[in-house]
Image 1 (cartoon, one colour):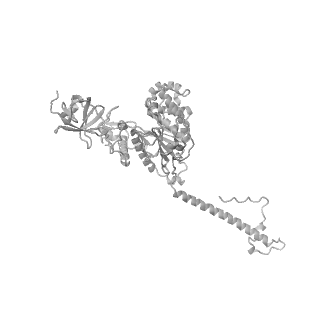
Image 2 (cartoon, one colour):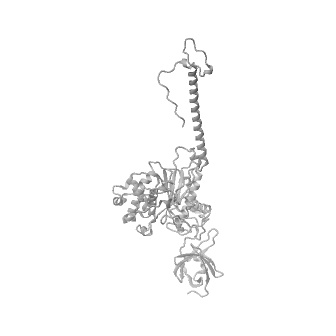
Image 3 (cartoon, rainbow, N blue to C red):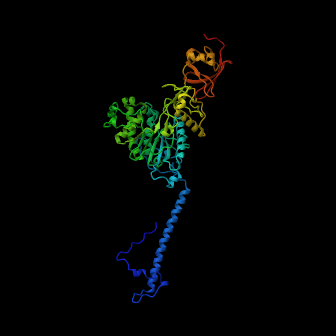
Length: 560
């Protein structure tokens, strides 16, 4: 910075006669008669000092401006906000382990690579001063089931962030993964990820193998790791789940004083919950509980640090208390978060439009993508091929359900819902199918899979009426076949299947799109789809899941 000018001299202001003195001796004039005479040397000294002082001030001002310009140019030439996440050579202080297990900070830091760039306008300071970026934290486990969901989620997160422009509040992204002893799983090159130790099978058995208990534990590990926490430059954090798909850009809905969370309709407390609270969290009243869980939620980092330990503690306490476990079921860990928030006095802004959880029975048009921020596909969508809902707790002739893909990725180019009936008017299942298709097509190494698409999951035994209406089913009724050369497979009335390996069931997979009508046979804990050539007396079977092919031939002997 330029040097400060010396303070003005105190005392009476100089007289006007001083201003009439010559500024420079080269223009000196004879003093007025009777006036004081100044020695030429004094006048020269005054002029030289003044000129020197002005020159010094000018020099420092020019230097300050030039240095600022050089610094600005240097910053513009470098990638903005590219923070290295640490590595095995980076010295870090020992991390506190809240669970009594060692936190391997070197392992956690080595898996992340580089964070997403911040928009250039944001780095240059051109965004509104009200901008409050948040960091998205995707909690996950490393299983096939959650890995393909994570990839779809991250694909659409990147898409919506790009659509939001340079001043988006969607900051960085981290996938927090509970995996083994904290080793990477191979997706860290595609999705920014850090890894923590997950519960062992023996430890998880204590919680009846309720794997969601890894979520609060993972967050505690993260907060205890200096390397992991160095990733977060944003003051706010958004906790997401693998089965979230962003419908539109998500702004920061929270403030420092008030987190934002979704209003879960199945989490409204009542006096019936008080006996649980009295046992788990004495002093907390049921009326204090809000119908919120940890996800989706946006909160200030200070609030997360404040609530994390009690969130974990109460989740464990609820799971180990049999009445609470029976009452809360699969949302038990969410109740642990809600109870912790109530005890700590953390009140959320409860929002109905944060996300939606639609299914086949919903009635939403295309404008639902403008009303909500997140499509949470916790429920499956089940339709008849006529376009009408299949019914409650039924697998549809057309079915989109994440649970179908527990051991294999969903295939690319899934068939869309029937373009008629209720399915045509209810847009969310159609949008979600297109979102899955867009992601699987846009991810280059999406694996090939033998899993079924959206048609073929409904496998009810064929009724006699259905058999009579199907030429293929009628042609194999009460006939005996060899399965891979092994005799003894008989198609009985009512969809009953007789095999050398025990009884099973058979039925009809109706034609849909480019798929012609097929026969399914399910036995010995495996599902098979058959292409039957009745005239040739043969079939080709393909096992659901791995695509194993078995050939069958019709036996000449009659069936009793």
